[in-house]
Length: 145
Ligand SMILES: Cc1cc2nc3c(=O)[nH]c(=O)nc-3n(C[C@H](O)[C@H](O)[C@H](O)COP(=O)(O)OP(=O)(O)OC[C@H]3O[C@@H](n4cnc5c(N)ncnc54)[C@H](O)[C@@H]3O)c2cc1C
Image 1 (tube, protein in one colour):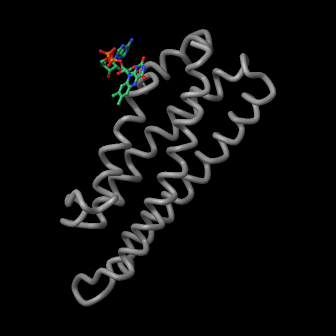
Image 2 (cartoon, protein in one colour; image 1 turned 180 degrees about the horizontal axis):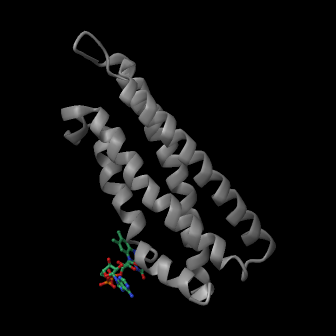
């Protein structure tokens, strides 16, 4: 159970890095790919979606920094923060990667595109190292609910 803390923290941190990369790559692709005569990223719906995701990713990053700081100072006393970081970053990543893949249209489904692989990989985060449901169970116990 102690070893799980490091694994879950790395999973949360990896999520943040992966989401950030996926959003930036999707924005790059969307500024090149044209639909109805203009780049996909020129449609306001995609600009707003990416603005929301960048904001949420920043929140996840700060939670990860906080959890990492707690873990460095109190390796045995950071369970609450690490559990929250994995839960938040892992669940968020499902939405972010889904939207990034959607922006690619049909190419998002093609396995040669990294975003297709990212969708497969990101599904692990809410399952491996303890599922999101179990993260919530841990928090329920820690909060004495
Ligand atoms: C690619 C990969 C690599 C892995 N590597 C390792 C490894 O190196 N070492 C290792 O030990 N394990 C490893 N695992 C296993 C992983 O930790 C488990 O798959 C994970 O913890 C979920 O357990 P389970 O598969 O037995 O699901 P189950 O326990 O069968 O759960 C099934 C579903 O029920 C839900 N559920 C269970 N209990 C509750 C509850 N109390 N309340 C609400 N919902 C609940 C779960 O959240 C899940 O959605 C790996 C898994 C994968 C996919």
